[in-house]
Length: 337
Image (tube, rainbow, N blue to C red; front, side, top):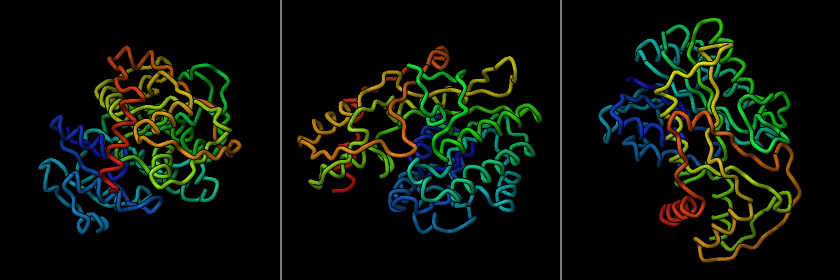
């Protein structure tokens, strides 16, 4: 199959593109390589996929990988209403995996416009391109943040999620509503992927594991929000990719809208934040200096994924915190030292 992966220079998109290529698919990667975080990391990911920085920097020009004969990359904005439809018309994709988005909960408090441009306008452009180009299946990144401050022990896709507490979460909920509408009106098969706290090698510098590891390595204090009274369904990148590839091949149906589907992808075993910190300390052989702070606006105290339906399709989270953290720390020390 020919598959478009947007956000291919990003954390999850990079790993997904690589996995799909290993499975023999033809993959086109798309990313605008914005400067939300260090673009050198994004170009380094693309280099792993066989795309040199000089080629990747050019706008709206497709370049072929030197490592994977079935991979090409194009730098483009999702919200480009001229170039994106032309790309769809020319490439004739079978499946679209839309992982491109303006990420980050806290950043959405400072730069709300960028979330509307990428996550709302850009997503509408993706939906329209899928609608007019006979796309068989659109998978798109949602987020566990849509659950807000839910008081339930375990978060289910059947829960009401009408109270987002950050603009980032609101844009992800909006994506789900928009996808539902296109599934209903035009029969577009859509699958929303509610990711739970993804971590692993090549991860984003604004994520907790990166911030903690970097600070400990430099002998600086780490910031512990809500005084450490938090827990997360930390999910290793390989498990996330397993979940996506399982759903990519499935066509699960819901009675009220058989073309619309949502799925959690998590670990299923939430861990206290301080246990996560301890795992990093153990892997680095250093004790962190800790600066305890109150809860940040837009953040939530805990997340926990109901994975029953995904597990019924063969999903099984395989990487525990100790193993996953060790792999991240090993990558960090190698990449930055």
